[in-house]
Image (cartoon, rainbow, N blue to C red; front, side, top):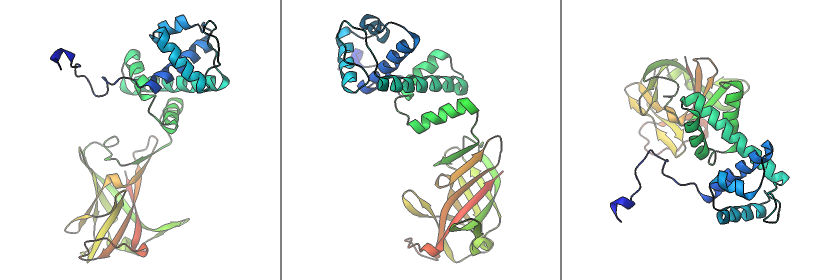
Length: 279
């Protein structure tokens, strides 16, 4: 390969070509926008706006007819969207517009840059995430945010923050019941926010002859122990934060076993729900 054949490097994701399905979604969005705004649905104008050759456009249109987005019309007739095509086109356009506005609002870039980035993002996010963007634009910050697998850098600057802990009996919710092991720990704990990893530090009241564990997506892991302090990474917690409030709370599943046990054989009766409150 000649050096001249190599593609110039760019920012991550900027050199990736759109897949065929992504281009089809863009075309559906374009067709719906022309239909909505009353523009002609003739092939020549669509080729020009979509920057496609006639043969390429016809191939896309035939596939979209098979998928139920378009009516089967003669080549000389205008393109007609089915009711299903109109509904899906409206969804594509709404997703694109919400993402563009969100990117402009949050990132401070101009409309062109926001449009370009929205064009890539809109194809890969789920409906639930798209609704989240729409909700943010409609209501501002949400009433609450639920976060998992996070080092909390989006919320707190690097440093140490006080927090309080409670140990609850799992599966008992209304009302919650404190576990007897609550007395093993100091109520005040510490949240350590690092640039890459963050941790919750628990303080034991005395040197308990136990091994302490926390549950992750990969199974049970032993908490790092330094003297009477136990360290648990924040990314195993599920956090809840509230609008316009510095207070947050997190929870994870913990357990204890006898001292010296290297493999976790966790009994259900030894499991506890660890809850922390941050302010």
